[in-house]
Image (cartoon, rainbow, N blue to C red):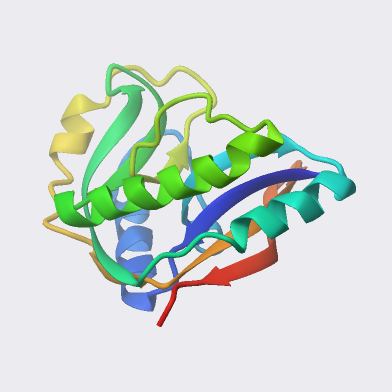
Length: 180
């Protein structure tokens, strides 16, 4: 099973702002469906059922308090001249809180042999780009959006992703709530 630890974007006003942005930007890329918008705290890959139970136990040991994140700023990975992904970022304080939470996830999963392949950068992927589309710097600059809204972060989820020809189908395996 292909799994990852994530925080879903659940606020309707944010999802609607992102959908509007996806409609407005003029590029040849596949938008991420609203139901799949999330922060990936750590991608774990193909995992056996037996290991998933250990991961769930480890995730339940994480303690964190709710916090808010403002979604703002847009960019591309690896860079706008050669984009593979278009993303939405966060405010500094919320981004720092997401980084701290991702480090807690890393710490509890390390003993199980999971290590992130790159440092966590707080972002939500809103487009995946399969083919070369050239430099999109100007298109991104034309889309200056103040912010997409604020969301309270009060849980993390272990999710599975099934790849299909029409895109990934994500479903929840477990949800860990913030402490009250």
